[in-house]
Image 1 (cartoon, helix red, strand yellow):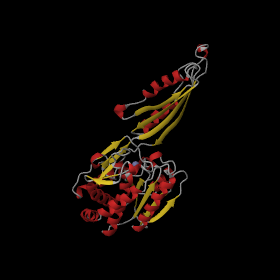
Image 2 (cartoon, protein in one colour):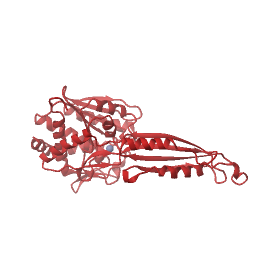
Image 3 (tube, rainbow, N blue to C red):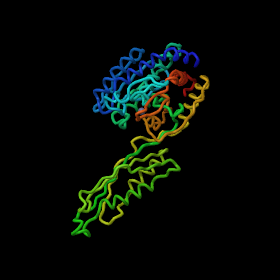
Image 4 (tube, rainbow, N blue to C red):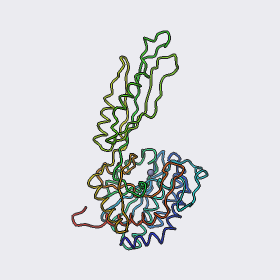
Length: 383
Ligand SMILES: [Zn+2]
């Protein structure tokens, strides 16, 4: 069966490339709702053209999200991804859409418009080979690149209604899927001191900057790189003039942690920060925006299925982890079996050399189709 799917995907790879090019040509930066909605209009048309029922989910301050479904009963699989990109409108002039040396280049091609195309070709392949069973849903969101503020609840609702979630974010280098993603936390630390004239009354002041410097050393000590916990004080600001003892200072901190337990430990330590200078105050806000995607039994089972489909297609499918988060993190944290990184093989997410490998497209689509087939198979006793 996988062979028939691969045949179909090979025969229809021009359709896929054309679809990807169409989506890339309609630039869709997260913060430009009109632009993202234009891309959504086209995607909506293309989804209906392959026989899917679509629902537009309006969003305020972001493009409308798109939900597409096919099938009425049986096990349900959710294909998940986003069509917003990090590139502003006009980026195509700097990063032209072009096929060169077996690669397709362009803004958003790797992260992750090709993934959307792969999902659509997979559904077509299943339909054409008579193996489209159960229910296949697709959720394409519009604000993943800025933290999924308007889509998180929708992602979680659709994940909970599904037996498995396949995330079509880019693959790891070489094509490996992602069975682990770190959770992502962001904190703001504000220190308050007492302003005073630095020349006349230096003893009356309490420096918020000196306090922040001490806090930063304490915060950096929370990192545990050998065990995957990273802490980065990425932004600092504070004070007003050289001759004033600073009244206020602030820092923005990025934290990554592989497990929920490690994330919770960092949150507790951040909340427990105490002033280190007499007379100073420290306020901490923030937390983990995306929980970790941990390699649970459900994740491992899904990976095993994917590996066995790949083997039937004559290839080896590796797994790996990443420090970057995706919407897959939300799904896995709900306990829904989730496999991430099933999208394009290529390189250069968020970089000028962003591209996908054209030769990998039919195989990736067939792999996905085969995996959808496995997940939507009726099994005695359920999954
Ligand atoms: Zn992405």
